[in-house]
Image (cartoon, rainbow, N blue to C red; front, top):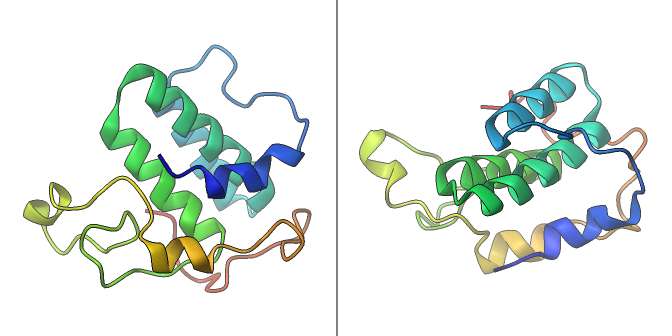
Length: 130
């Protein structure tokens, strides 16, 4: 497993968004934080959704949360169809998509020093979380 994007978030000692919630509920709450432009809160919620999805063995929610986390970190859609950041052009593409970042996307993830967690906006702030 590639934990690089989640290690960036470990510096925060914040209360769990997901306390007592399922991975799906936590993912939904992270989406609400994103819509409210609380990008740091959305990233923490997405990290927690990923952890819960791994515990629940819910691969679909894990992949979706990683995809959303990638967008909050400024990643765009990837041409590698196996990368979690690839755009699903149809239902048949979903099963081809992996649940991890490809090497190119992993190397594009900003370091902790590059992120301003309090006021960070995705590079393409007009892009909606899916």
